[in-house]
Length: 96
Image (tube, rainbow, N blue to C red):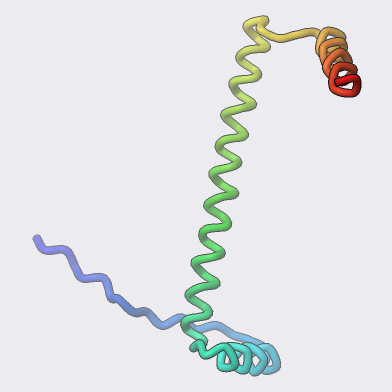
């Protein structure tokens, strides 16, 4: 059974305040761009930005889970030991 062809173009209608539309159209025209070109660019930018946010959230969640697993397994340092180690490192870097 053949797949139905997806239209290569779709109409996207949105409601805008008249002043916003006028300013947008004038700015697009001043930059030798059509409104459609600018909106497509804005949509792609929006999608990419949110994909990066989602990827970072997944990365951070995995990192937290690994840290929790290490802590549960007893593979962690006491706060006093961490402070002492970094105090020593700071002292070495100052006296470098």
